[in-house]
Image (cartoon, rainbow over all chains, first blue to last red; front, side, top):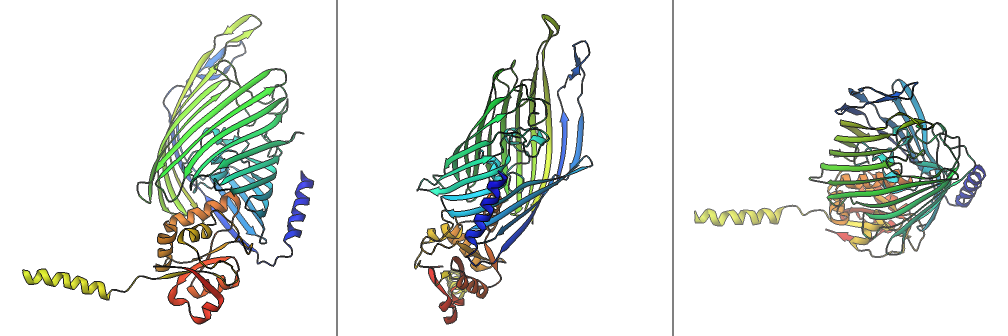
Length: 388
Length: 148
């Protein structure tokens, strides 16, 4: 992959060397301080398993409120020549006295035709709509919290939301305005690694149409192989039990036209892992977002998300979580747009999570009976998002 | 009462007659561009780089030119040609830049600066008050549409 990157970079620069061009660099800085308050109204009863194989049940209900600086994102783009541009996006996070710094994107793009250009480097994986439109610049994102399906691993999600590799893409093909993306990259990530360190390359494809302005309908697929012994992406399993073929299929419909009052996004993400020996496991998540611009400043909105981790209430998906779970939430919010650079959002989220703990057995002896743990969380969040 | 009834409409008619006319803007492109006429809809698509990123005949990047500060010409261009508010235009270009690194519109402080830019950049497209199109300016750029 490194060789491909080097060859591509040299070729792109050589091809554009004969075009005289004044380099044009734009620097933007995204920040999103957040004030969040959350309270758990239901009881969270699970607190582990004791040495005798019995569930430890303890009420761990808590309340908290906190200020959060969120991510600060330095975003730089530069047009190096008529056809070559570069983009870099670096995020700084400061949570619980731990500061971290991440290269979110670093890519070079060579534009040949409207229907064919090439990107190389680290970029968002071409999965669905949300992931490519709103990743870290929360001033552009319509809600405070992302749908669970497209959350980052550090936020409990499993999506490989960015990847390193090469991407071929095209837009506005025919009157139907067909677009496509084909990415060959490192593929699915494992917890704790910025880029995965296994021997398999991932392939991600996306094909879609934009029949009317702002309406995008697309399908995406990501194919890769996961490796035994590696942790799953969000770190809930330290060691995957088997090698397997990983498939992620995504269907998206989005109508986000700045000239219109209504906004709508719906996406379905279905993930299947066909393990070599232990069979097939799967999870899926679907969400619907809707908003309506009452005035040019105020947009009330909702976001409903349902996620099932595991094939059923008795079969878990080790790629996602060690126990089967169902998570649903409804967010009701309002967005106030002072201007294109400064947005205030307030959101109330009702989150229900059911974790299905199974019977604990040793041989044929049942040590403890399984139970369903219901965790209810109601959260009020407020966010100031800005860019300059 | 009758007198008042007659005088009030007359007064308003006079006010309208002497009120300054709204600006008239010209959409301009480089002399090197082979395009001669564009419709309002086409200007919108090119200026926003919605369908095409490059001009078909001259094969140069489309470079939209905007004004730095709010002014009547910009208001007219945004409302009549783009059908968008200033915030919507900024968000649109921010979104494009964020998604794919696409360069946002260039912004200029005056009509004269816009004319110089469009004259020098074969792929540029901008808008200026028609009153700013002096004989010298017309040697640098050509008008593809006039909007009132």
